[in-house]
Length: 477
Image (cartoon, rainbow, N blue to C red; front, side, top):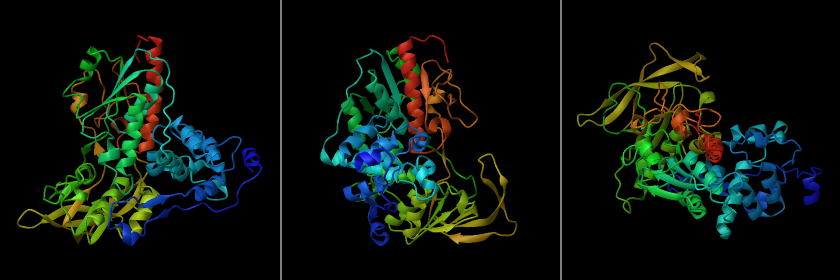
């Protein structure tokens, strides 16, 4: 059957396989991961749906260029370890990508099977293979290229930085990651909750990079402890800036300074990185509202809303100024939030907050919206409806409308061009900045985006950095 399958002559005619998961009424009481993942039997069934196309479209939809049909075929044949190793030829973080990447808008979106049926569950199969390798303790450390004598510094240990480090260490370069926080992983550890991405998974992927030879220095703020220029003076030949977008954005409306109004950055960092959800084991303070409002409708908004439920809220509402069609969150995350009881108040935006005599938020005045013509984002512009004001009670607010660029490193790096929003200007194809020997990628270039897009930027930058290091190039860019 495997031989016939490889030739594209046979396909298992079965429906797309679902992952077993915690029931909504159970999972809102804990921070354990929601889906349990595939069993070997379900994984092979799902892998059997792949057409093994002669000209697969799915590969083109993957920002890190995984050979998707090849790893799926190995799962179908029962070679789960082989599938994991095939994945890691192009992706050092498959267990993470299998959990948080928006496959429905990338590889699965262009799956040929999806034209007449549901697409192959590429992300679920990726997660299965990576988890199987880890569970079996058969992590394979690939052979690296001979040492080049070149040194690379990576500022930031989020998805982009980790990808650069993984790619370049395998090409024979010495790589050091500098992480400002005390834990490595960037947004993977401070931004994404345990129930969506267990931190043990992130640590396992980082440990893999350390086994490859990547040096990791946590609690090291580039721009404060050392500048970019000082890193060059210390002998680094190339530098990648994967700083993320960690500067909170607010709405600048009356009452926004009331107590009980968080940025999503602070709210999720307290819960995830600082483990407030494990009180009293971790004595991290965090406000636990009973009537919570979350602004925005991206994945960060869903993470914040679902965290509030698990911290004991009676009612949690997503307040979003556009319609459901424009919501940027993953379909799966919206679905899980709805199952758990999160309410959605669409075409609504706050105008001002009200508080009590002690300075704590008690409610807000909102305005109904309607959609006009598309704006620069490509989505229809929300327009206030005159006379539609109404009040909404709340005792905790989380503002999740995006994040900006932290100015610390850019302001200490002469020759680094920024755009009008403070993000680093870098070439879309290879990540080169305006400063010689410096590349950048991920949210510090694009603004808040997805994990896999940051990884894709890291992949392109790593290829460019390798070419630069090996060519002795003197001109720039």
